[in-house]
Length: 175
Image 1 (cartoon, helix red, strand yellow):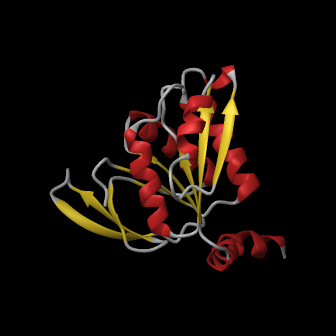
Image 2 (cartoon, rainbow, N blue to C red):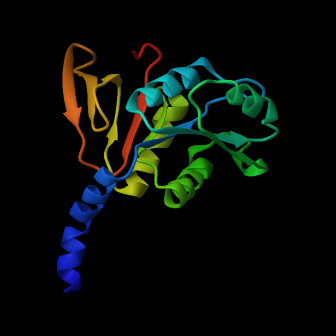
């Protein structure tokens, strides 16, 4: 009995994820004093998915960033992790934080900017969640359908993800 449940558990979780409302966690990239513009692009992309948009701000003494984010339209909630552990914005420190946030809030999407920060953090998060990250997206066609570049930007591919959590990063020129 448990073997059957184990094999079908991914399909069951996919069915459940279709029933819940869309919710996106945007990982804010910042310098502890100011938000980077790529985060605003990512918030815009998350808004295109519909549903709630939550931003995660992790760092040290990052109250200015939280204040700046509170003025951005479309953000439903801001999660703040202000601790010395997150001082260098290292993916090794931030990955467990994102996993805990995902466990608690059950987001349908997790997004960050397509920078060195996002490209080093999100593949780790995706691996821990046992999902495939979706890279280099240039458009969002639906909650599970993304357009991305392939072959060094020489071709365009439409990707439909069946993963329970879609993990992706957005370039500066999305939308």
